[in-house]
Amino acid sequence: MKTAGKRMTMEDVARMAGVSATAVSFVLNGKGGISDATREKVNAVIAATGFQPNASSRRLSSRKSFNIALVYPSSASPFTDLYYYEISRGLTERLSDADYNVVFTHLKPSTNDSLLPRILMQRDADGAILLQDMPERLLLQLDEREIPYVLVDIHTPDQTHTHISVDSERSIHVAMDFLIEAGHTAIGFLGSDWLPSYYLQCLSGYQKALEAHGLSLQPGWIQRDANDPEGTARCIHHLMNCPQRPTAICCTGDIHAIE
Image 1 (tube, rainbow, N blue to C red):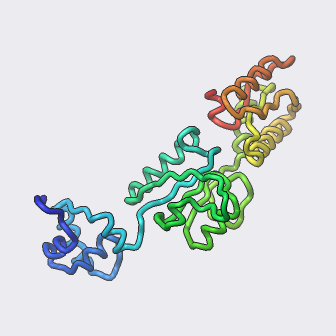
Image 2 (image 1 turned 180 degrees about the vertical axis):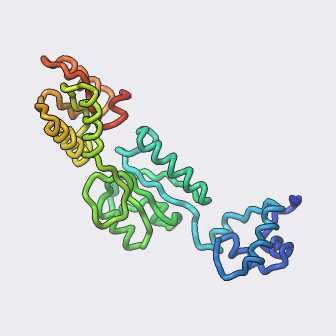
Image 3 (image 1 turned 180 degrees about the horizontal axis):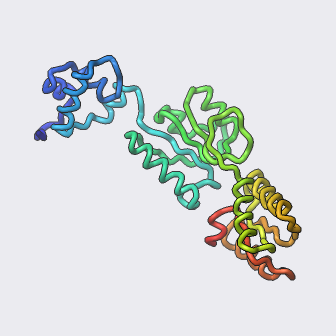
């Protein structure tokens, strides 16, 4: 039973279901306070008519924007880095399932005291997802405004903020174990110290794996200037021209192997 003509309103749904407009609002916003029978009536009308609430009305009634700000620095751009592209794709799909929009927001250097992106300053987002380590000043400003947020892929120890991170040292150790078990004993190390804490964690994993397997460390096999395709090429050239050439290379990121 699809309707034609003017756009349906919550009042129309309420009239067809024989309930109040408030009950319809409760159903649309997932609130309690109404009986299961009333909820079933409203959902039946919504399913039959294909009713979609007006976005502005929904925001007003729920006091939510249904936006989540995805804040990223230049070093974690989901438009140029495949790793962060995959993270952003997963976030977008999951938030879409929950009827939320993702607003991509580049963190720009600020000349004033506030680092908050405009969408958060104007409270046009219900929360934020922050890629990589963020300035402490920004986190304090979010806390002061009671804006919920989660940090993703941070590289410094953090016991204060909700975050999702990878054990980079352990990851490299596992990668080295794989190469060594495959028969390689001369393994180069390729990375970038653009993010010092991440680089040092990866280097520690590399060194500990060599030590665990009784292999010596060759300083010339450690390359840390793979900051871009040209830098990566120079690092590879250096490794391939070492007096004792490595038979395998452990990369700190997919992008280095691809380049």
